Amino acid sequence: MSQPLVLIVDDEPDICELLEITLIRMGIATHKALDIKAAEQLLTQHKFDLCLSDMRLPDGDGIDLVRKISTEYPDTPVAMITAHGNMESAVNALKAGAFDFVSKPVDLQVLRQLVTKALKLKAPSGSPAVERAPDASESLLGRSKVVENMRRMIGKLARSQAPVYISGESGSGKELAAQLIHAQGPRAEHAFVAVNCGAIPQELVESEFFGHTKGSFTGAVADKEGLFLAADGGTLFLDEVADLPLAMQVKLLRAIQEKRIRPVGSTKELSVDVRIISATHKKLSKMVENGEFRQDLFYRINVIELPVPALRERREDIHLLTDYVLNRLAVESAGVRTTISPAAMARLEGYNFPGNIRELENILQRASTLCEDEVIEMMDLQLPEQRKRPREIDEQHPLGNLLGDTEKQAIIQALEEMRWNRTAAAKKLGITLRALRYRLSKLGIE
Image (tube, rainbow, N blue to C red; front, side, top):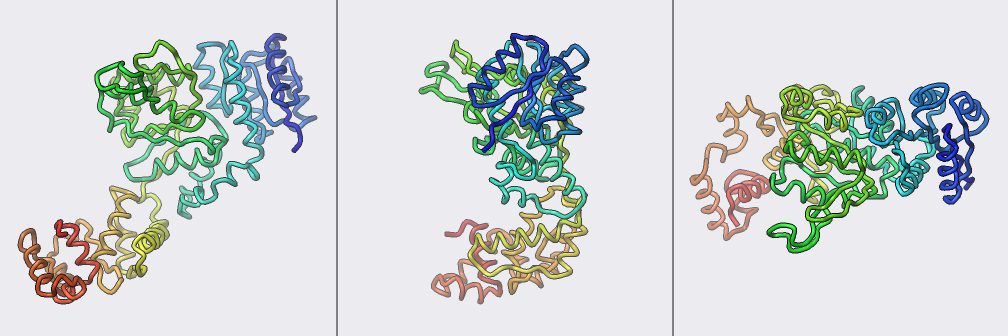
């Protein structure tokens, strides 16, 4: 492999020398420029694997250089060197297309981690990250325009370290989008850690995120590393981030900005290298207006927003998704693949799916269990308005009018008469073996 080449743009000799020595020790060649004009000249002469640029330059703003490189040299990631504590400039650089940032005084460990990740990107068409996870990219199924746009956006986000905020309704696939950003990026070799912020008891939130030392509180019988350290080098996905208590939001903001955490009960801070991706089905901007979510944290995690469309906004994908789910169910049950009638398919394509893809999966799992002759008919879907027609359900499934204890007694009686031969009992009841298994599970009959 050829030696990587990095462009350093800074008018401070000490900073230039520090960066150059660090990179040379990593086996990386460098070229230096004191201003934007000199940098632009070097960009026309060499193909750089990374550009490290100061935010303030004698002849302009470093963000202008970010925009130029992002447009004219998209294969070259740009990392910004920002003044300590100037998060607004760092966020603006990320929004403009910067790969990442490092604050002054430059932490060499952080710098080395940043450079290593940037060099893993290479060209989008042949990046190792993309080659590592072809199956993941294929799991975002759909041929609709909104899904194609989403794939392109995910590809761009994977080439950045900017925090991403994924918005969308429950069940629409926000966690899948986060996994794809991670899998196609330079952090793919490290952990993807997902946490539902609303599922953690309020008194344990800090310990879950930052860890704790033994004896730091009642019940802390051993040291615990916490989610940030578990995701070190990788990605931390904060699902339902809107549910975080306000007190924890302050501590989370500091951890993101400083890239350091302090476990509960410890006097030492630990450096962490984590990319933050967050999501919620709630309107986070509205919560900020109502004082329910901190504006500064919202500003920090919402550097780039990725909207995930609802299933009703991509109806042309429902058929493809249905085939995928039915194939998966057949593999999981090691049985015959269930098919779906044209009428049932048309009914699905006309349904609004308030629960999105998750609801589609549940509907198909239930329908494939209850259907006759391995074919899902419209009534097997049991969509809301169809549940109001019990007579038709009874005609489709003879046990449809038996509820609770009555149904349980009928099933047990049939099983006893057939000496607990489920196949024979199902035949006696006039239902399929699959439908009987579903009812046995539903009614808790061993």
